[in-house]
Length: 432
Ligand code: HAM
Image (spheres, rainbow, N blue to C red):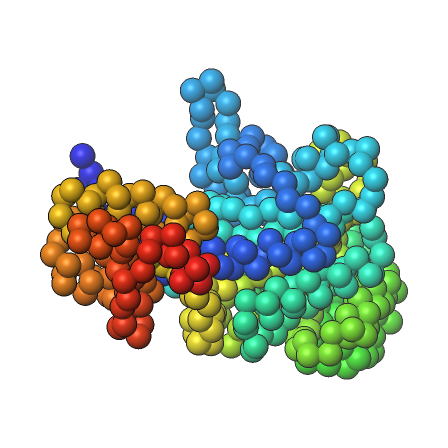
């Protein structure tokens, strides 16, 4: 037996009732949002073929996958994200579904990341994919959904970091750089190692003009979209006209979002890249000031579905990290509402009244009122003090004397008042 078996495996966590409550609160919000935006839920397996998951996930993420051979000798892995599974689904079972397709998923994912606050080996995502449109309004919808998600759980202070991967790819592509080498540069950028990215570009023999453009590009970080467009336009685009299209696309998307979302804060960073390799268009991550790791991320991926044999189907999506949103809520002092519903404890006085107590609790539950029975055979006073400790709103005391007249004692735990009432009047007295 492993010496540490009393603790969860490193990187895994137990969620105690309060944490589980918050997680489910976020899940409930995520689900409501999906419904409001017309995203239908799909449930895909936790275990998929390694090759599917590894296809375009990027070197860093690939190395962090939980990979194993199942008993049938298949090389499989625990899913590190939803997007590959969704792309598989769209390329196969939903290939002929009318477009656009809007899909929502929520569940646990697995990455062998180095554990720290907000970084776990098992974590949860709420994932939204909009499939079938290459138009900027599709990207804008996903951005506005992201903002509504953060607002919906009660976060007020957040920022969206944005870039367009097409800008960098067109520059490197113009230099004739193979996609795999481009990906290596993106990995450096994802780790914020700008020097590493420049060194790699040098090593791959890019022109001096390109190196200069990259250095200029990497220094551009601004809050204002128009300034971003202007700076990139002035310093880079004149040399690489292909990048212009990407920049215009980014600009169109942000203009659209700003047309109906007035409270969002953006931040534009030209050296920002994501570890996942499938992105082809806008990329973004969302941050709260209290955490230096992203609470969500997404972007456009127009060529992933075709890898799985689905033809050229453009798509854009986002995943919000539920665990990190939990931390952000705590830091911004957002408390998920606790239920205000009644919660009843039925206390039998003496063994002979246990069956009656169970009958009453069953009647309450049938009417959708949460009810528990005192099963520890504690004295009345101890059962009552336990009830107030556990936020029970009402107790029903089932004693022989009252029962002989078809009555029970109903105690309101908040006002500490009680009355003897007929059993049939109980439902009217407890707010459901
Ligand atoms: P991602 O940026 O890898 O994107 O993950 C999205 C979010 O999941 C992160 O922003 C973070 O909140 C959360 N997350 C990632 N790793 C961990 C971890 N080890 N512990 C806790 N939370 C974590 C994707 O997964 C893409 N599939 C998103 C997407 C959907 N792009 C297009 N559609």
